[in-house]
Length: 319
Image (cartoon, rainbow, N blue to C red; front, side):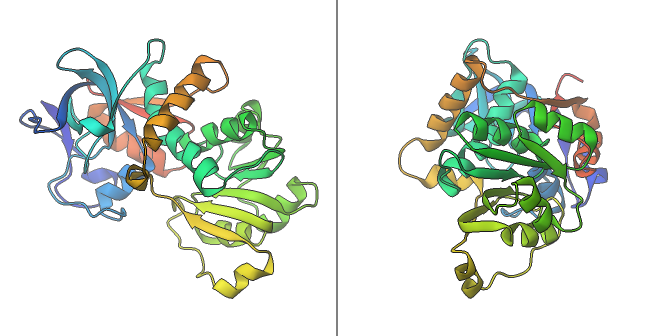
């Protein structure tokens, strides 16, 4: 089968198209003929071995696919330790989910990782309450575009989007944000307070890191919550001193999606079902970010790392 392999860790240049033997499903696994592959920012960390879960070489990156099982059931699946950048993939049965009729490949993949991430951040980390203000950093990205829509659908009082260009800010407003501000602002604390009409903010969803995180924490209202789920800027925030959290009774939490599967009950399945239902009701939509040939996975990573993309990026294994 055609696949993309990494034999040395690094940037997009290490993604190499190759021919590999077809994978074989073991006990409790499903073999999937892949129709589309989801590209996530985590894949760029996986390729350079800077992800939370260590990578081992040789590596076929990619953690999510949509396609058909051997009995022709259409499914979307999360994979164990990569393997997604290929014409065929093996996924655990427990992380393989049927795709309802009317849900296209883009939407299925958008809801699987980005949608579920936004769902968990707002429900489990932030415990969003109606009327609260929500800041969505990187609001034009895969998670951000869905988080803006979910926050509005779930009754947020004011959604503040941050993005780096006029076009991205316009997209965030189109999706329901009440105000969109420049993510490159020198003083993000002052920018967020001004965007919230002079008030401190209740919830911040942050995957940027560095000064953005530091200044967002400083903008939190009493009992405000910042949910941290990535570090796209590749710069660590300053260490948080616990005593400083007392100043506004603030909460800072982290979220890594695989941990959701350790929770009792089928939380991930519940999230996906709710997300698909919102799509079918016309209250939620996936934003296309571009489709690349499997052989041009390098181009997809370059585009993603440039932070100039919007929405969800896909790979086509047929090209």
